[in-house]
Image (tube, rainbow, N blue to C red; front, top):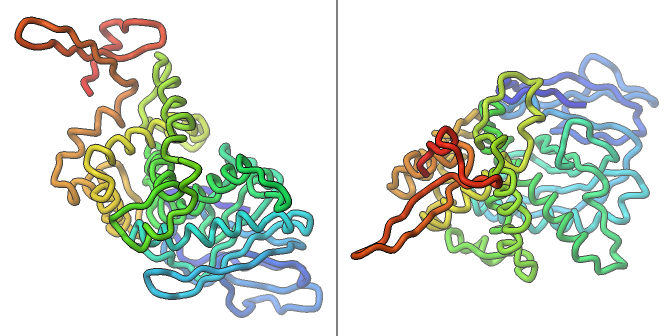
Length: 368
């Protein structure tokens, strides 16, 4: 079950009653309140938690099996349990997903210089998720993903399946920072949750960063060349959609909750990640990540909008980030440059690129 609203903030939540033989995963428990437990029923109540958005509140109960591990925070030295929950049939195929969590949790903490604040993190395999397009949901402390994206047969060497699982787990775990610790103010800023993650994921999976040396020692699968694979999975997919007259800006108006699912597309995810990746290359990856860390720290347990991210990166770089980036985020399309040689130099002309050919004047007004 799940509540849905990004800007609603809360600290106390309802009690639950469940059959005592079931296992439950949630934030944390306190002694039963209101209803006395019995041999058939037990009652739990969620603890006070740090202020958080209500759309990432969830619970699950049922006759689950689980696989358990832990990681040690490189910021505090605390050991946190990590669990994979699912049916008894699924758990034998859960080790790779759980191992991925163990590897990437301390890296994310180092990258953003923010420790994961909850006492545990679970990932939960379910057959169907009705509200999510990409296959997972970043409920705080209890990630839910479709089973097909989490299970790996340990007797095979299916690298493509491992890459799919690592991508899904890495994406949803990153949401513990982008989306859960710091949450977009409204759905028109969806890319602050999704684009940032798509941009940072190749760094985690493929290459070290000198910003935080401890994280550099923990880079995970360099042989996958995830940074290069980004071109096919995100960059070209975003360009294809953004070359249409029917495209929309990354920061797109979302007038009401009924319109939310319409903006979960390659522009909110892949174009956002591509232009943030461009910004990272322009200012330098270290300064980019330092600015992202500043952004997250300044908006711990708060909502954020575009200007908040720009302020963080501007603070680390000294550059006018809105001047550089607003046209890429707030306008649709991207440019094609025409270079003409002339006596004494060259002329460079910028036009919007469209799959249908040269744009009409009314569709060619943006300067990037």
